[in-house]
Length: 83
Image 1 (cartoon, rainbow, N blue to C red):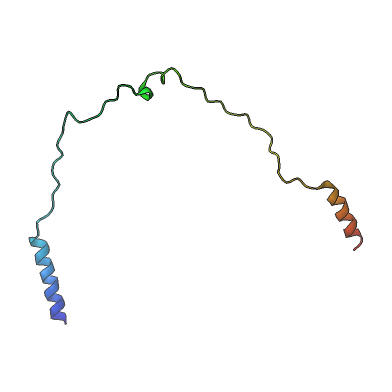
Image 2: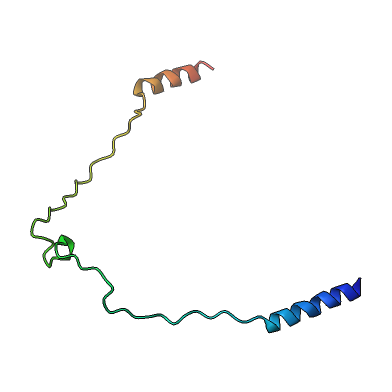
């Protein structure tokens, strides 16, 4: 059993030493590569001149959708007094 393990480890080390290592190709520069958009309005210096203004709504007081029933408080107090 140990001979098989040692033989497989030795074989693995030999194969890893003999196997060629992978190398990436050097990048090639192409001077004619690229895109030019002549009608791109986003690259205009003033945003195209027709830029709409963004207006933010002013903050308002928060209104609760569920409102407490004020009359219920007095009725509740009466029921507690009867206990």
